[in-house]
Amino acid sequence: MTLSFEDNIGTTLYKIVKEYSDLGIHRTGTDVDKATADWFAEQLKKRGAKVSRQEYSFDFFDGASKVILDGIEIPSMPLYYEAIGDFKTNHVAVAEFGDGEHGSGLDNTLESMIDSAMLAGYEALVIATHGGKGNLVAINCEPKLRNRIPVILVPGRYANALKTNSISIEYTAVIKPGASTNITGHWGESSADPPLVITTPMSGWFTCAGERGTGIAVSLHVAEWLSKQMPHFPLQLIALSGHELGFCGAYRLTETVTVPPKAVMHLGSCLAAIDAQMQSILHADTSTSNTIQNALAPMQVTSISPENPLNPDCWVGESQCWAKFGVPMLSVAGLSPLFHTPDDVAEKATTAELLNTVARCFTKAAVAMSQISINK
Image 1 (cartoon, one colour):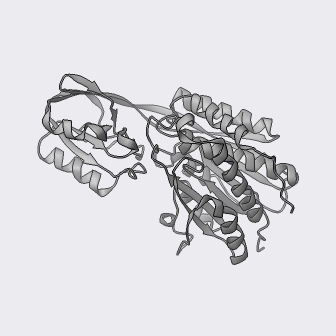
Image 2: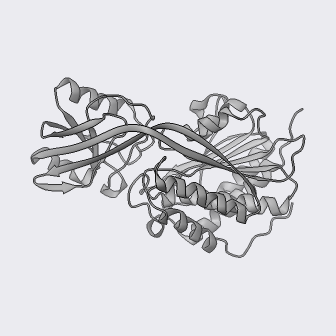
Image 3: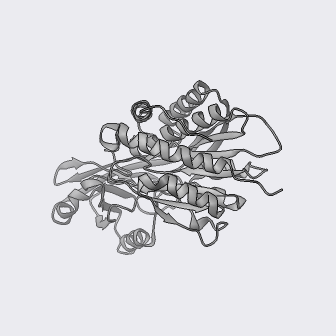
């Protein structure tokens, strides 16, 4: 297939990133999350796709926090699902966490901090999160109540002041019924061949321009380009909510898949974010792998070969949820300095030039994935 592109698609893609980011804070189950699903569905319809929706329910954490440091309130947010109820105390433990690459989820270090604070009898824990150029860095979690003490995240730039000044906190949180939506665009004809699936998350802690918006914009471009070049080819573009909550939307969706797809392309975090460190994980035949690695070369992606493609732990983000099917899969994701921070807005997170480069790379990779033969 001869690949031809517009001279510069980056400007168009930047507008999509900004539209997405400007919708607001993209946390799963919120009004912004609902508006985002509707917005994405319209984007698909504009590109000629048939749209289907999957609604699902989950336990929604609704919480707020205040941290008063030496009489002045500083930015903060609850660590979700740690505690519910109303709290007001100055019997607060302080800790520091992370090196700028810790936003993907709870780890043993963080668990140990919480356990230590509880054993010492503290009524709350404030954690200075390092990374994001001194900003607050949110942390992913499972949507399950752990019933411990309130844990509150604050920007790392306050770490030293927290050790030497008076601290008090206010915290309120409840668990209530929540709901969200996965959106799928369908192109091509139903046939004996299953579809190529392109999947990208659409939820996150803040406005997520670089983290989520770039993957959304690039995936829309790739799907539209393929659908025009191969109008009969079965293709799905799936946008998933619940990313920050243990990929709950992706797990719900993949539970409903009865026939494995032809192949899966997971377009994960920070695809065209400024100063992002990217990695690709690829399971495919040698010829396809070589073609895809060449296609992604301008992105300077670190390539990893999974030892066991069926092991979810080999994959990143929502690609974990697709590993069980054992089909050829490409997963690309990364971290940028603005990852999981309030500063992840379009003007700071990406550029039209970056988006142009990345969209071309993934279009070439998608063509290679579309040409994979299925053993029947």
